[in-house]
Amino acid sequence: MSLVHDLIARNRSGDPIGLPCFCTANEHVLRAVLAYAAETGFPTVIEATCNQVNQDGGYTGMTPRCFMGWLSGMAKEAGVSMDKLILGGDHLGPNPWKSEPVAQAMEKARELVKLYVEAGFTKIHLDASMACGGEPNPSFGEIAKRAADLCATAEAYAPDPDKLIYIIGTEVPVPGGETEEPETLDVTSVARFHETIQTHRDAWAERGLDAAWQRIVSVVTQPGVDFGHTSVFPFVPDKARPLSEAILLEEGLTYEAHSTDYQSTAALTDLVKNHFFFLKVGPELTFRFREAVWALVSIGEQLGSGESSRLRNIINDRMNEAPNYWQDYYNGSDEELNVLKIYSYSDRIRYYWADAEVAEALDDLIETLSIKSAPETVVSQSFMGLEFGEMPSSPSELIERHVQRCVDRYFEAAGQNAHP
Image (cartoon, rainbow, N blue to C red; front, side, top):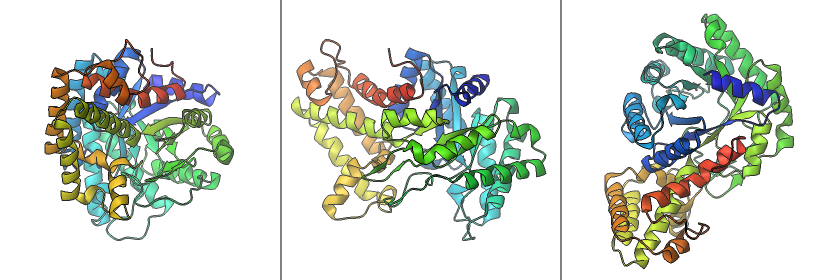
């Protein structure tokens, strides 16, 4: 982790450099991220969340060890050594079991952390902020004590604790995104930031975790960025300036910014300049993926492929047959719901791409378009902005290039060189 510490030191000294963190379990998106990493050699953070990957399988059906094996196979195919990747666990804590009594939920959270570190994840976000089993919202002090409990588990079971880096703090939307359209957004106050640091420092000291305290590199706070279903809150540097200055009083620390999806590249750059070193992105990646799939559908329709309409119909049917991933999030008329289900910023459609029927229909479309390649003029109509004479004809490469529009701008904002 010396690379991360070196980059953090540079950021704290005023060098506008940071690290994007790509939070997704979508195979096509991960292949695009890995292809980018292979081409550029940039340090690349890939993260799984507690809801995606856990001991019960999460919504991906994968345990941490399964996810690691799956990703390792894709990295090998892409030509990326696993030691060039930083694997993170996001919001590790009791969130998947928050309806259960707190003692039971925390026991499962310890097992979650244990499995992540044993599998080789090294960037660990400890999040025990949620109320469990109907209890009142826990205090800052109680949140810190529970986070320290989870940290002790990580230290006990990691193959090499010195390779771990920890993220603390929780002032962000719940894992999975906002359930309602946010109306206002407050930047974390300096007082709340100091309270987070002090309560965690006390909790770590109480557990004898002095060595582990030195491995904390970042604090999650709210810089004033978020997105709902139809709107985005842009970063305003002046509002975050007191918070930005406060981090420099804490040795070796930076901030981690969650829900930075859909911020302009300039806003992302400003976040890094204000010591929001880690930029978390997830739904924007699968938003771009969905755009690419819909572009392929359009190409298929132009070429007379029946697979195109089949894919749209199957996605619509599966979202209606299994509405649990969107129905608690979207409100409105049937027409409004139809638009939100497919096109919203919160991108709830991302939960359906791994559905067996949807995945089969997409594979069939990709196979059909791989055999019957489209003319450059047709590709250009659906994938606008590609250079003539350099347009890929492979549907998989078209998906990859489109997803990399997101990947590229995050690295640009983080002070890395632009995509070659």
